[in-house]
Length: 195
Image (cartoon, rainbow, N blue to C red):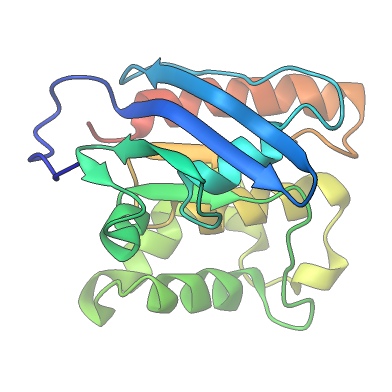
């Protein structure tokens, strides 16, 4: 399937007839879906249902046996590096450099994503502001609470302002109040993200 120009028309994500097999077990069987721009979509199901496998295929971290994934007009398996510029993905078990400050963690991620040095400081401030951690920029990541570490990880995921963000088990380990707060963050991210 060829790339189409990403001009903010059509669905943001299209998954077509996706099949993924682990040795001796089919995890995804002919999965198709579309995700429209400006929406928040949740995958719900029991452990082992294939949710993380589907996210890994969409993020071009796992190669399906069949099917296609198009994100913002880009076939993610034909052009994964281009697709990664248009998405942010936070795995369920994410790592942070505990000895680095929040600012340095964000700077590291910005550099890894190729954000130019002239725009890096502004990108760090913007991501931190969106996640409500500006006042923690000089704190070491290892000193943050679970909820603040989650916010830092999401800030790293959105620092390049992708139009599509995937978060695997984003509320894992958070208390009920933090989960409610995270829901508000999702709505704010949706409203703040460029088309």
